[in-house]
Image (cartoon, rainbow, N blue to C red; front, side, top):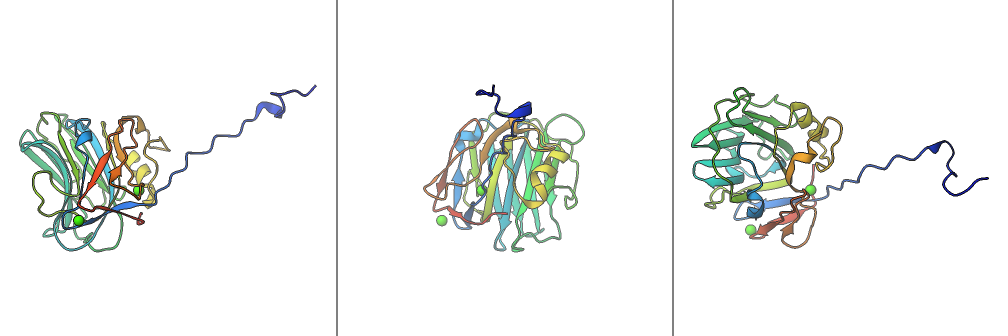
Amino acid sequence: MLGLGNTLSGGIVPAAAAAPFTDGYSLLFDGSNDYVDIDSAAGVVNGATGSISYWVKFIGEASNYIWEIKVDSSNILYGAYNTYGEYAWAAVLAGGVFKSSNLGISLELQGDDEWHHIVMTWIDGSGDGELICYLDGDQDDVQTKTITGLGTFSGTPSTFKIGRLDAHPYSPMEGNINDFAVWSSMLTANEVAAIYNSGTPIDLATDSGNYVSSGDLVGYWKFEENTGTTVADSSTNSNDGTLVNGTAFEAETP
Ligand SMILES: [Ca+2]
Ligand SMILES: [Ca+2]
């Protein structure tokens, strides 16, 4: 007889649908004083090895600081845009030794009305490939593809800002930032290509294709709230951030 539990012949079970990923909003920084305070997450960032990924759209023609994670004046991770050289910076200051990667020279990323994906990966003291960065999924527009000689990162970060430097408000971000993520390991080139996904963000909290590092995610802010001044951390650490000085959500995404 046909009973409960065997109504589906052959034992075929429909595959679970992939978790839906909604990316409807980014943050818009006004270039005056907007920033996000995520000091609560600073301590989970490993200055000795890790990766940072975010999407950015630059507005205006001023130099910008995009983000900073800092222990003290000798141990800092940060991202910026240098309008004089027309390139994005991904930089590590470790034990007082400064190393940076220049991204997008000659592309004039500012004012191109395009979203760009930046990934910075680092590991100190390992020899080759201590700082490896990517623009829009690959290294085609990265000036120095493999940087060695990082110093030894010392201490635990205590400040984490998106949109400006922690210590002073000069050259704040003007433009949009979306889906900011931090890992405790170096993403591989194949993983970077997977999360760039030809220009469409994916959910970084779930492994997908060549991306297999969701377990190393230590901070992940999607900026999907579209209300209030709190932005949720979608990693397991749940370190929410605070929008400061009118930093606004905008229905503008890659
Ligand atoms: Ca988003
Ligand atoms: Ca403002």
